[in-house]
Structure formats: structure tokens, C-alpha cells
Amino acid sequence: LLTKTIAEAKPFPYSFLPTSVALLMVDWQNDFLDPRGFGASLGNDVTSLRQGVQNAKRLLELFRSKGLTVAHTLEAHSKDLSDVHPAKKRRCPKIGEKGELGRVLVKGEAGNAIIDELQPRDSEIIIHKPGKGAFYATSLETQLRAAGCTHLIMTGVTTEVCVQSTAREANDRGFEVLVVSDATESYIPAFKEATLAMIVSQGGIVGWTAETGAVVKALA
Ligand code: TIU
Image (tube, rainbow, N blue to C red):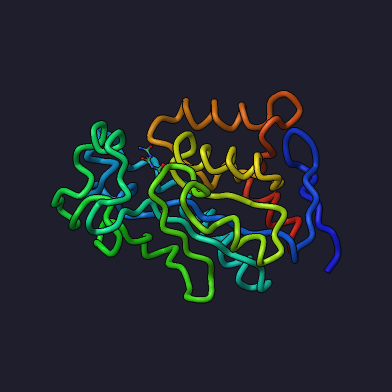
């Protein structure tokens, strides 16, 4: 397979080999998108998060149709909560408590599952993570390297929390990171825009951004 280039990417064109890229789907979970989940319990209006779902689905289907690497992450704690730092629990006391969709942010509960539209396949990389960044205390880096990935195209929620933390962790590990601007969403629109602007500022200090259509065009 030949090099592909997303010509419209900011701050300049983004080139990758299809064999060395992964689509990273960050935390598309009921806990963040469902009005009965964790995000809503923090006082957020969750409706804005649905705007990116169709674009994320389009990319997921495209990567699958081409046989490219796909990885999904979930913010998910063990049933005994042994992987919740006391500092996290102090500021998010609902973690582990019984909510309308089961125990909040606990692996295996209905609220913790990925939304129906973006369900992972068994053959894809699936990472349960205790932090906001997907590289902290997980095997994500090992699994991506084993799959030969050097480039990450990211979708997910929320832009300024788990997507941004993960993008920065990936960048520091030497991955070439592109965040798909209309396949990531935040509860706070101004924070989404600020995050995307920060990533590409200073010559791409953290990475690139591009719209779904530009990614699709490059891969088609
Ligand atoms: N609260 C919020 O915006 N996000 C999170 O707590 N986790 C993720 O972003 N996945």
C-alpha cells in the first residue's frame, strides 16, 4: 500500500502508510453520551456529544472495509475500585456508586459499554483504562507497536479531557497524531474549539487536525 496524504490537514498535510496507522476510538461510552450516565451526573448536558457519532461511525466502517488497525478505549474501573486513585474518587465521588445504568464507570456495567452505533469487534484492540489518558496504566502502547502503528487518527469524547490527554501521551511517545475535528465532541463547545486550536498551534506542537471528509478522501 502506498503513502496516503490528508492534504487539508492542519497545520500542514498529514502523510501515513495505511499499514502503519490506527483509528483510535476514545471512550464512546454510554457513561458519557447517555443522559443517565456519568457525564450527566457531573452536571453536563450530554446531547452535544451525539454530533460526532455518525462521523466516527463512517471512519470506523472505512477502516474496517480496508482491513486497517482499529483500537477502542473505555474509561473503566475494576469492580473492587482498586484502580481508582483516592484523588480521582474525591473529585468524582459517584465512581462505583449505583446509577441508572449500573455502577458508574465500572467495567461490565451497562453504562460503561460503548454505544450501540460504535460497538467494537473482538478482533480489534480494546483498552480499559483507569485514567483520562489511554496510555497510563494500560497496554495500549505495546499493542499499537505490535501492530506496527506509528500514526494515530483519533475520534472520541470528550475533546479536552480524554481525547486531549491521550493525544498528548501519544505525541510524547513518538506517534504522529491527528484528531478528527468533527468526530470528537465536548460538553463545552468552546473547550472543543480551544483544544483543536492548541493541538495544531506552534507548527503542530501536539499534532494535526482534519475533518472526516478529508480523512475519507485520502483513504478512499
Ligand atoms: N468529564 C469529561 O469531560 N470527560 C471524562 O470524564 N472522560 C472522558 O473524557 N472520556
